[in-house]
Image (cartoon, rainbow, N blue to C red; front, top):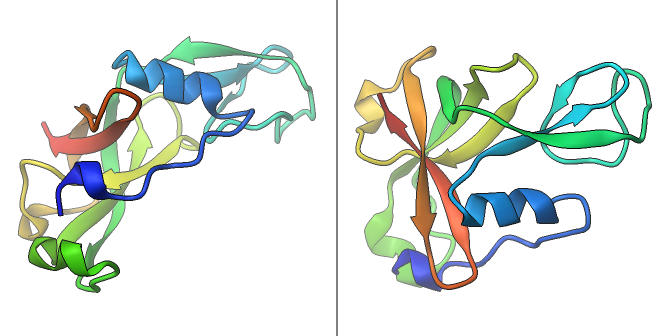
Length: 137
C-alpha cells in the first residue's frame, strides 16, 4: 500500500494550525503566553499554569529517539508488504515535554537506540496532507 492510500489524521480546532504549518514543511509548537511553556500536542489550556493564551513558535525539527516499536501486525491487508516497520517516539531538542511519534525512514530498526539523533522529514502524501517522519542524522 502506498502512503497515499493510508488513513489520514483528523484535523481538529486545536491542531489545525499545526497541520497547516506541516503542509508548508514547517514544524511549530504552542508556547504559553503566560509561563512560556512549550507544548505538543496542541491543546487549549496550558498544563502548567492553566492559561488559555498561547502562540505558535517554530522548532528546529531535530530530536533524539526516546523509544520505539517495530510493528509486525498487518492492520490493513494492502500494508502486508510493508511489515515490519519501526515507529519511533522522539523527544524534540527544544524540551523534555515535546514528544512526537512517526515512522523511521532511511534507517534500520537494528540501528535504533535511545538518544539516536534524528531529523524531521516532511512527506507530501497528496495535495492536502503532509506527514512528518524521522530520519537518523
